[in-house]
Length: 71
Image (cartoon, rainbow, N blue to C red; front, side):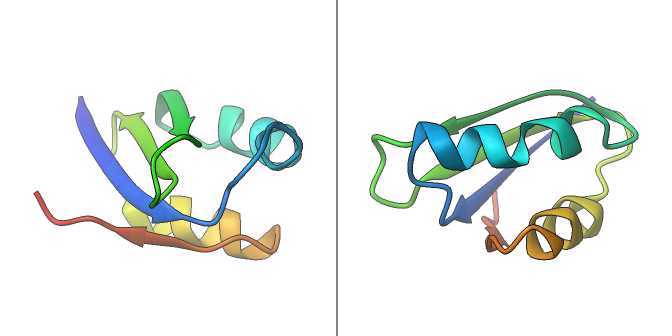
């Protein structure tokens, strides 16, 4: 299991709702959450595949941004 963290522009409950189905259905993703209280709106994804591009591409298709944070 790989934990990926992204800086995002997912800033409210409505945004979370808008991305929920797509992230839940993303292959390899077992869990995800967004810290909307953090200034960088940190999206944490637990993934079996560690495929950060799939997460970024999925959010981009929905009109959101995600930038991988280096460990």
